[in-house]
Amino acid sequence: MVLPLYALLAAAPAGAEAQHGVAMYGQPALPATYQNFPYVNPQVKKGGRIAYGVVGTFDALNPFVLKGMRTTARGIWDPDFGNLFYESLMTRSAGEPYSLYGLLAESVEMDDARSYIQFNLNPKAHWHDGQPVTADDVIFTFQILQQKGRPPFSSRLNTVAKMEKVGERSVRFTFNDKADRETPLLIAFATPILPKHAINPDTFEQSSLTVPIGSGPYRIKEIRPGERITYQRDDGYWGKDLPSKRGFDNYDEISISYFLQESSLFEAFKKGDVDVYPEGDASHWLRAYNFPAANNGDVVRETFTSEKPTGMLGFVFNTRRPIFADAKVREALTLAFDFEWVNKNLYGNAFKRSQSFWQNSALGAYGYAADDRELNLLGQAREKIAPEILAGTYTLPISDGSGADRNVLRQAVALLSQAGYSINDGRMVDAQGRPLSFEVMTQNEGQEKMAVAYQRTLRLIGINMTIRTVDDAQYQARSNSFDYDMIVKSYTSTLSPGLEQFNRWGSASRDQAGSFNYAGVASPDIDRVLTSMVNARSQEDFQAAVRALDRLLVAGHYVVPLYYNPEIWVARWKHIARPEKTPLLGYQFPVWWDARVQ
Image (cartoon, rainbow, N blue to C red; front, side, top):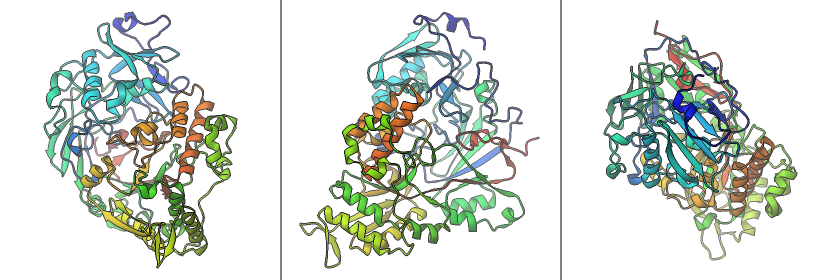
């Protein structure tokens, strides 16, 4: 890789060398001379179109602010569809656990201690209006997001002691003692760079549908508020020949249509109005594809596997509510959920029960006994963790599948008794006679079905759980403000958990509107383990810290674990093609293409 003169001459501490990429641990797998990521088709014929579909609505084009609780159109800053509009300094490879390669920055400089990182911008990078992407844009972005952005964008500079322009096209971030080993990588790829010349700071928070200016491969062609947003390829896109972009951005046009219900989205897919359909419902996958296009081969159903953890889907307790403050109450309610009945009757036994937040990976505690590293990290907290959780043998009870397993419900009632509850006149009440009653907020029909099954079982032991299904906008607004008793959420997991875990479980995020700390967790033990995790220097120390975190989360009973699917299902119309190789992190929509283009 030939570096420009300004990158070679830019001031840097002794020993710093320009690099084409960085990795969380060790070195990136690809050399500086790499031509493309190994999971793409670099010879793909670009053109054609793809139509995506999602459930929900939208009324804004700015996903970076919290004010007004607006719902942003998909694709603007959206890894699922490839960040079509805005770009970051570096991009992540899906073929490695956590490695970044050049995008807006063609090279980086960083010392072994990671006390700073310097980004040397690609001189070809420019905005849609032709203006160059500059060091001033980078500095402006982090400043305005700190002042007016939503979490986690607003906290990016909390770890930065100094941000400065270096040389002609370089920016250096020097970190303070709040930074950790992951901080430079988050600066590099988890924040979009915004155009200083095209943004009025006074109106930045005023979300609207005014089309902004980006630097990405697509421009916005058409907006139909709440219904559809259409993107058109920018023929003058500056980065089309970058190694990190070869095989990406293969369509001339990308549309994302919005539907009020999942059933309406699927009907649109069946008619060919939507080209791909990621499937998450096992019974639907087994029974719903008996239609002409699926039967004659025009619609292809594929099963993928991924080497990343399966994550955690569950009913989340809002521990800010006094009713859920006691872990024994949460554990009892967890026991009462009859997974075996739900799996058999709703999903045709297609799923497995989640036992860990990093299920099916070496990062999860399930199946692994705590070693000396973990025990030292846990400290006195291990005395509050059940022995079977420390031993890695803890599992949720297996019911008889009746929806009314007496043995399991007896265990739940015993725990509630320890928490001061008893059954009086058919109702579970506390010492003051107040009933154990709460509401679960659901978002769609699938969640509602699970909740109804849960509701029926809880009623057997005198617990009143009501169900409220709300639209997407209300669900997002109430999630952001923690206005619920219980909610259904999915916690995705990766092979490289980092600072995002503070936003989910850290004490500082508990009362921060818009954070992902849906459970309201505030635990000094978890904070300590999180800090050890992000500061780990070796893979062994990192793995021990994640497992320790997993044990604390499981022991805290913050979530009623539901299920995971070891397989990933996607249906597509056959004219949408994909590379043969599936990368480490699973299939990637941004590298698929329209096979009708010749």
